[in-house]
Image 1 (cartoon, rainbow, N blue to C red):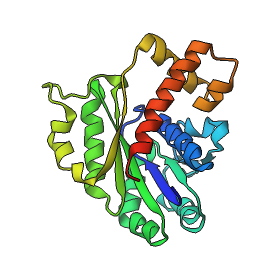
Image 2: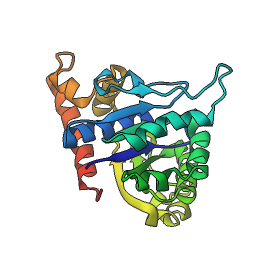
Image 3: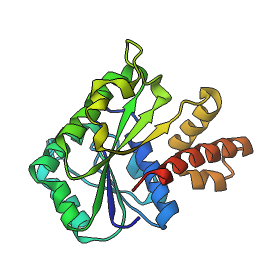
Length: 242
């Protein structure tokens, strides 16, 4: 995998965009040895706090806290002129601006012309988050072109079924967008008292899985569960047809 650009996009906040960004970055490090990471969230710079990933924060808001779309140009200059693999975490507060910027400026054809393989990663959550995240997924799939889409299903919030009990994969939003997908990665629901607490600890400390496995701050069983979780996610990522 070389010269790839991965945008993590979803309109709803708190759905796991930064966590997915960290997992993507760790996967790219595991597979290629290096990654360049950027955080465009203007409120919750979670991704930027992962020291092991050396994430750069892109300031998009002016002094009055209004998003200035032209400031995306700085990020695009880097993506277009420098080589490597890139992960860009986008906040809910920049979603609409960035999506409009991508469409208006034909970002994906431009990156493709620069010999970059681009991917948009978007998350659909279960439970009460399904309706909003499904709408976000559909909007992305319908509006962007010239890129590949990876769908992440996050079971942490509940079963990924509609209020009527229909699996998301059987909904119109999914069926009308399925042809755009490179593949799907599932963050499976695990025991909240064990796996859930360990992943919460990992996120609170802003550690990568590799850091946790090498740290004395985690018990042997915590390390075992985090190792199992990592193998599950990274195995799904390796299986995708990049």
